[in-house]
Image (tube, rainbow, N blue to C red; front, side):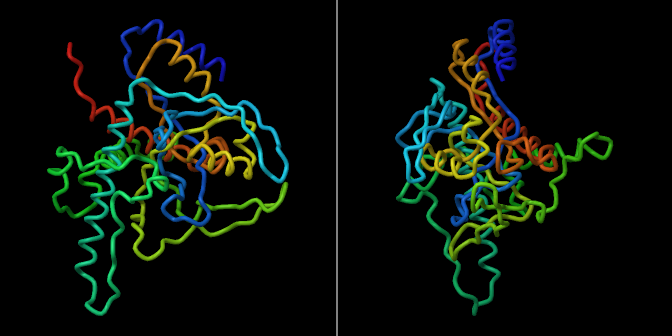
Length: 311
């Protein structure tokens, strides 16, 4: 991606009043084979965001070194914007989505039979914050007016609204099919050797888990990674992701991020719509939809920004 980095440098040199940089596209999700709440699926979006105790939002693996017993050491370059304003807006969008989803489930609960087993929602901000990808925050006041009961969950979620608008405008005349592929095409495989794979089921929600809404992608906040040394080796990806907290890989945009930071842009964010479980380049079927979902989240972040002072 050296050429892309050079192009970014020329663009930022030409348009010197650019204050915020969005790197939007597709990527590969890091699946969690046992934990439903941590499991990233095709069509979801990962927004680059630091994990607790660290500042980096993007990490590039330059090299790996085996230390024996199936463990590895990683040589990495970590990147972090000086200004996390875009990430803070993404946190608000995530909170808004969770609260709205909880409301939908609460309404569903009231319609259940009196003989049905009680359904308990998990706390919004778990005490063990190492299991979530964003810091626990109070509900912003601006969110509360948006959380009135509605017939569908997406009425109060900006990025889901923009996704629907995008699907409507990119109709049959479009060269690409931007509609969500069939759910059964989201197949998950596990490596059981150097070359052998087996298909496995996606993790099922435990009692009390906040379940996915059908056809509704999820928004995750976590660092995004890259590097051929780890991106295409399942065991390395899992170990790397566990160590650095990453939930998505892309096809080596480190040169672009280098250019953004080198041109003194203090505010940037990487958004990756999940198109496969590698690095975003393998499953062509999911790429159009995943890219549209990522673009919808980008629009929601932009609309959540304050207007420039000289506007």
